[in-house]
Length: 383
Ligand SMILES: [Zn+2]
Image 1 (cartoon, helix red, strand yellow):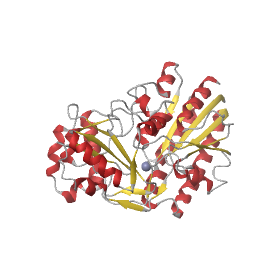
Image 2: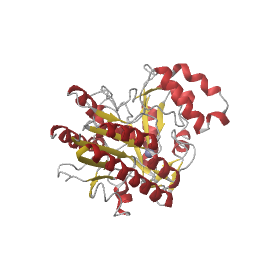
Image 3: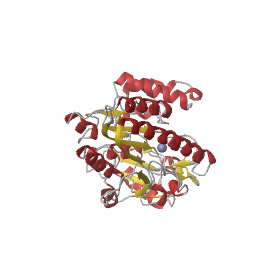
Image 4: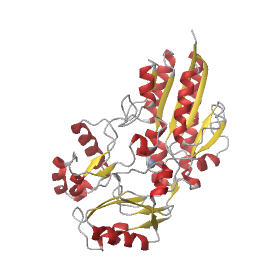
């Protein structure tokens, strides 16, 4: 017997508004209504917790991954890894496996990635996302949609961490056939990975989107066999910029002759750098140097507040230096080499906006990615 309604929240990582604009008929069968959503400043580590909670990073406290905190750093016991041969440690697969190993041994369920973090500096840092955000109790502060569904005993489907997009689609289909869930939340990561590797213009990007279209058509078709009403929301966390310039920011800072870990600490993310000052001289020299660099600029507290990424304790950095749009820090702590696509630039850039597509009317108060949470709440209330 058919059930009443199922709400499908299908998250396509990095499906930006600009990208979708190039393919006006994409997903027209399952989600003909489109809306541009403002992203959250930062990477997926900032955006994704906001989508599932309706909160800004300042509120749920997850923004960037690594933050200076030598007294709470869990990485002390991994400092020996600095002695492993560089040819091995610079291999991204090796680092990826090591990330999984470290996360497991620390009992973390969150998404831990070592990226290109220098092992000798790791004991200076703590890691923000210790728990899997897509589970009840997943946020350090505030409730996510899974807390709420748990409290109200709403049966839901959530994708398995680390599974392939294909496996996630199949698992969802199996649950839809049983007809026992009211809401599904599934994240698809291949588009983000492919655009980092190839940029946004490559033909493989539109091929992948059309593959997603086939998958989603099939998912919705199967859902309709079990449910009278199938409400579909396809959405992203952010868009993607094509990288057009590189800048070696570390070289500039290293040239100041200050000692890392004694005078200052920095994390060179790929589109921004974050600094902590351990003495006044370092603060003065670094700020002066950063002010002279034209490849990016220091963000003001007022800007960070307007982004919802201001932390009064400056845990994620006392200074945040944002690169100009499409300029990448190379090398950074996220990667040694330049890549063609990146996100995490100014949220007002046209390329930064995310897309939301649906077969339901999208309310006017849904303007930013964290408002998807409101839609989920309404879907749950409106059974
Ligand atoms: Zn990405």
